Length: 212
Image (cartoon, rainbow, N blue to C red; front, top):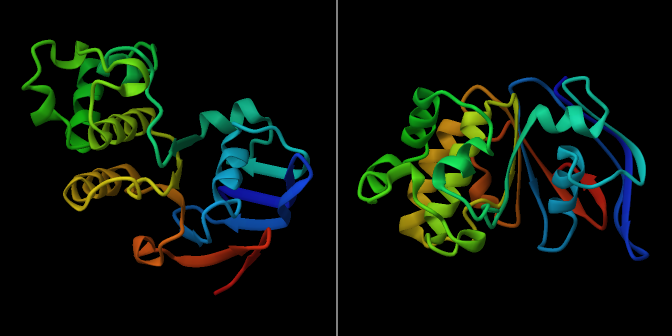
């Protein structure tokens, strides 16, 4: 089992967001979670990925319970891509040593190569503060290339196309298909139509998970 969530609860300033959540995701499964905006879906992914500290309950990813070890096993793609004020290359590698062939593969898979080849500085182009020098779709594909290069066994998707227009979404969806190929995936959204191809779809409502 790739992901195990046991009796997980979480509150923000007294507001109970997650209430005794239990979830098991098998290797190779793609699980969708539907729910309203602000209903706790993003919080669940950030807890699984180790970005948030646990308040109660347990989470295991690939058998790892420690948040540092969980992070190594997870690639997280958020609704609004978080880019560093650095080059495209450094945003993909996160400053780690990485073979050029792997970076190029990640760019190809994320539908970035044609655009990068039009830039004077290519992979060394500065993306600006918070990615301000690139479009939303380009930023999202850079974030997906980062996840592809990490090659983690578990992929967490937090509404990765919801902030994009239809034309841009098509390119990002193609990139996501490459990212999730052969992986264990947990995909959350408030739009059921984005959760096609899931092994199971669950509903998060009132802090609890339900079968649809």
